Image (cartoon, rainbow, N blue to C red; front, side, top):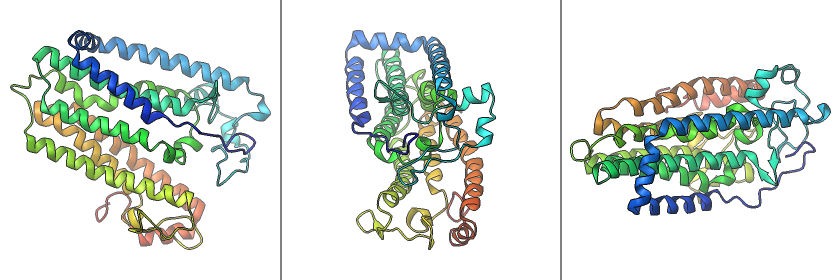
Length: 356
């Protein structure tokens, strides 16, 4: 919602169509020898691309800080979360937010959901990051083809999984509108740099060592390719299943089941806390799914060229999700009190069912 509690309109969520069109263009460029050579030359200047993205990210962050400061003080988003459809009342200003200094405001941002020429900046940034991932994949695939005459099975497997990641991410744009990112994160350096640099350049890092390898001497078997993709799909089922179950609960709180009646929507009485289905396996089984997906993405590069670089991605997720789960647990305990303790008794595992 905006500052008056009026729901923001998202009538044209076209991220999937844009990514599909962009992917088609990239595939045509890879198939055409002249444009493929151009992509390979661009890949050889990866450090310059990374530097340029950093500059653009910093300039955009400075602009939105300046824009946020122009908002009259009585209309600023000085609270921890913006109004949402289920909680449209405007939160009271948080003294901690109002007391933040310049660097904290620049880093975290000043506006929740700014729009420029009718375009939602957050959704646009997410799309920029997704297209950046596709571009990096195309650059590295073209680089390997130009230098070796073909693309390895490891590169094909990795690009297939990562492209699936991008397409799935943009296909489910509507559920994304109900997530923490939309109502609790402001547009600052953290989000802008993350979408323009971290997402497109560091998420697909698993393809970097593969691009420099010769498919004739360093590749994976068909069995390893299938195993990697199957593991990825397992992680996807856990992550997307848990997120969609929560999404269905938000748009239809009274529903008893979801996924065509296969999954129970049982909740802790008197709360919106799901305690069945995916959310009955572990309190954050969606985190486990994302870690499994990251491990699957690490396998092609590791198995083909024995590189440890791809393992940075799953290690990043582990380092991110373990403390985040602890923070979420404390926030929910403060919010729900004894009801949350009851949920923890019913679902004792934090992330990994039966282990942790």
